[in-house]
Image (cartoon, rainbow, N blue to C red; front, side):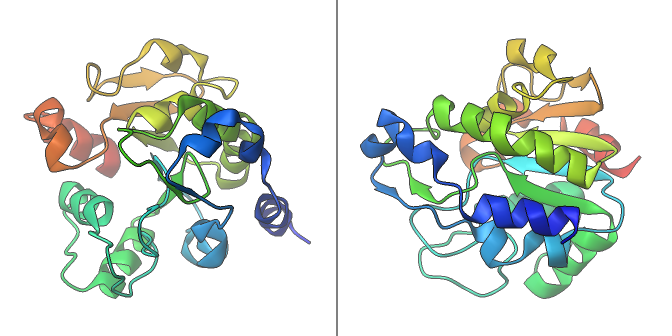
Length: 215
């Protein structure tokens, strides 16, 4: 087995987050990992990752996923739609949009790999994000070897801050510091989760995002 296959095998069987009491406070929780289900690392990883985008977690209230082009009940496609807009990728045809995303050497992963319904919580619990950061994100970064990283939201920032070489991110805030580039082991663009709810933090900073992604 190669490194990617070993990573996916180990990730598939992981249920570590279940040991945290906070897991039981979520509305819905399981250990299904869409990145494994849709073979993200085998199918959607470009040969060289120019920018790794780290999102919060897969949708917990539907079966939809960033790398699944099929329409799914309850899946609003907010992340994919807004990320494509920021990257100026035509998302009217999802298959073509995803192909263009890969062609540009972009890859998207999740801070928390499992599906969980947050209920009324604004984000997944920080303990779950940092646990995944310690256990999986460090290995994933070694596997992907991206040139640059962009964190999309608080959970992504918390997860990456646990990885050696990125500890300086622990003082950053997704909203307050949206648009800031932190030069650690790799350049990291701090960004909010792209949505209408967070648009005020990103207002007027789209050119920073575009320059970071395209250069």
